[in-house]
Every structure is written in structure tokens, then in C-alpha cells.
Image 1 (cartoon, helix red, strand yellow):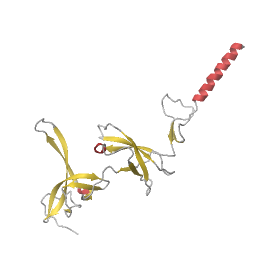
Image 2 (tube, helix red, strand yellow):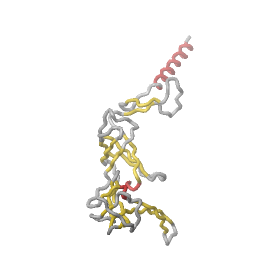
Image 3 (cartoon, one colour):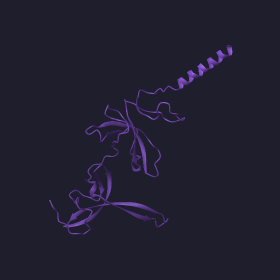
Image 4 (cartoon, helix red, strand yellow):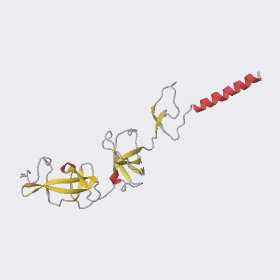
Length: 223
């Protein structure tokens, strides 16, 4: 009888331990956004069972072109908008950024934490995040579709190594003819481009049909 009592106590302790291991406790106040396994299913070790979402803040890993790595700083303000939530804008900050560049996409990730959220914002939504990395003044700003680009291969005469160089240009009207002007880009936004060099205030920029004209071709300006 004593042996049976010990066996029963051992079985009880094992059952109690298994019960405790079957409980899931969130490390923070959260809402279950997704469940990956049904009741009774076998869960392999290390596999996530739930997706938890905190109602007090959202994080997003934002891919950013490598050229802005030095400009993005921890603590910078971020403005976020979401196509599914028109008219609403959320404010966040940069929490951290990767120190390595992805060799395929040529981007790095910056983690953004939104300070303000509401019940309409959902995990997994597509968003547009804006970080003011540079301010320019007294520069011509033109529509992005006015810029044409071409890639050239440049060979170093000393080493013989080749590299790709992207050049930008626009078409302006001078003396009734289209003239191609090389330009440099100082800053880009969604639909606008700030021109660093190549354009002057008062230049007549061709913004319609610029992909069809050639350098020196006669053109007629239509007001």
C-alpha cells in the first residue's frame, strides 16, 4: 500500500507539473491576434503558439536605402500613415537601426515605435513611414517624373576596375529647342525632387512629353 501511495504521489506531482507547463502567460498586457495550433494538436518545441499584440504601442521594422544610414539617428521623429486609415497620422521614434547593410536589397532596417495608437490600427497593416533626414533650402524642386536617368559603366584607367554610375538629367526649353541638362539630386520625397546642381531659377522645365523629345529638337511651349 505504501508503494502504491508513493506511485500516486509521483503521478500527481507529474500531472501538476504538466498542467503548469500547459499554461501560457504573456510577458506583457496583450491581445491574442492569431492562434497557430488547434486544441489537441502536437506543438513542436520552439514553435510559436500565439501572436500577441500590445494595445499600448506598435513597432515596425522599416527598410531604408543604404545612402541614408548616416542620416538616420536613434530617437528621430517618424511620421507614419496607413492607406487603410486615410486622414490619420501617427507619430513615432526610431528605436534602433541595423549596423549592417543587406547586400541584396542595399537597405538597412530601422525599428520604429509609434507613440500614439488607437483601436483602428492593426498589426500587419501596410504603412508609409517618413523620417526627416535632411533639410535643403534655396534649391529648385521639380516633379519626380521630370527626371530621366541612365546608368553608365566607368572604367578606372589605373586599376582597370569597372563600376556603375547613375546619371540624371532633365529637358528644358532654350531658344525654342529642347536642351538636355545633367543634374544632381539633393533630396527626394514621394513625388518631388530637390535639384542640387544643373537647374537655375526661371528655367523652363519640360514636364510633359519629356521622355519623347531629343536634345536640340524644336519644341513649342503650350501655356
